[in-house]
Structure formats: C-alpha cells, structure tokens
Image (cartoon, rainbow, N blue to C red; front, side, top):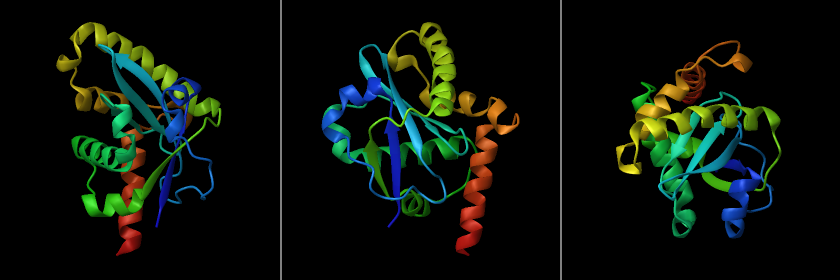
Length: 175
C-alpha cells in the first residue's frame, strides 16, 4: 500500500505534535512528498499544502485537532474535489490508492517548498481581506487560482498542468 508523507513547517508541527510520526516509509513513488503550513481565518485552522514535485497546492480548511486521525480521508476528499475543480480527471478509488495512508512528519526544512508556501500566503492574506469572513472564502476557487499561476521553478508551467500530466501518466500506466 502506498504511503504519502506530508512534512510540516515548524509552525504547524507545534499545533499537531501528537500526530507527528517519524519518517520510516519510502516516499510515494508517483506524487512524492508534500509540505504543509498552517494559517488562520477567523481563528479557524487552515492548512496550505504544496506537492514538492508538481508545486500543486491544496487548502484544507477548518482542520480541528480531533480530526487528525481522519487526515487521510480529509486530504483525499479535498484533493479529489480540488482536482475536479481544476479539470483533472481521476476517480476517487484510484486517487485513494495512489495516496494511500497520510503520514504527518516533522519538518524537513525544504527551502523550495517553504518558499512556494510563503509566496502563496501573500495571496491568501489578500483574499482574506477581500472576502472578509471564513464563511465567504471560496476555498476551491482560491485554490484553483493558486494552481493556475505559472511557477518559475517549473519552467513557468502551471502546477495544475504538471499535476494533470502526472496523474494521466499514472492512470495510463495502470491500464
């Protein structure tokens, strides 16, 4: 079974210390590793997660500590919804197999991934001002905007393009 590791920034790590596990498995061969940070909207904890290989971003909104034992389901359902929103086709069962189990790991200080997260946080802070309250924030729409911005580290390709190519290759390989 696949295992997907999400490395946490120190800021996020402090809030979910009990859920952190030591890295033991090898990384997910298709999607690789992810890096997550935390931000707040109306005192609700939200996570911004970036895929290291594709620079594809995912926002998990209103994550409560009590839900961390269901992080695999929450991550998979949110990613499935975001992929559909971005026009990337993969059925839930296949995506679930691809992701496997989520393991939350302590920070790996990945400067590239942390840089991507920090750049996106500027946009998120502006959208928080524009939309006002948590209830007004269209997270999937904001997430799509982030994934539709060309990324310099990816030779100015769009993260959703690269994620689409990665998923298409995986689905083709399975046929």
